[in-house]
Image 1: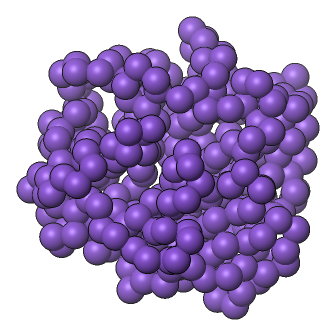
Image 2: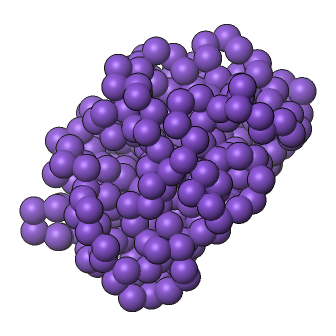
Length: 311
């Protein structure tokens, strides 16, 4: 895989904003962080997965504060548009929690009936997205499906996948990332199929947007896509766990470019190791849960317009 500078967009060097790169459980360290969220003040929320907690890092702080401590693995995060509620996946317990940031109360809003395959259950929630109507979209990873949970619902609705792993255009295989655009279309990181699938709202099948040629280490392929974001200009950003980089695909392009990481596993400020969750802040800068390096990295994108979420 080429990692020459011609394939790197803007600034390739990251700044550590949470964790110190050493695995640990104290307030200054992380243990395999899975996802990240950023508020309007550029404070950072981290799904500190193997410490079973959500950590809050005030901007510029060297230490985090625990907001949620669970007996299960905390994976995906989503901060709603109001900035008042933080949604999170509790993978082992099969639920999605809604944390009020004003009083730290928690409400279970999806799952909560133990891991399983019924429509009121979740089996390994790998990713979540919350739309402006507070509908919660869940990448129900081990069930190979995407579920929609409307507000106050006690059961989910299947919107993508069949519930059985597979490679067809109506199937998913271990999906871990979900993004929903303003039209209600779902962009899915179909991880073990090494592709990004676009499911139009109400459709019974998806279209492969990235990864048409199967798994690949070149710039036209993916290996293990974990998260996907579409910006306001239609650019698609994908974190690839095995390629150790974040890739950008312009609208209609089948070949991408590296915008963070080098494509080689490493610990330097311009490298990533098993990246998972990605988010933009209000300035269009990119944050990466650099899982293998036990840190969160911020990459300056100089992309204040397109860097905002499409939705």
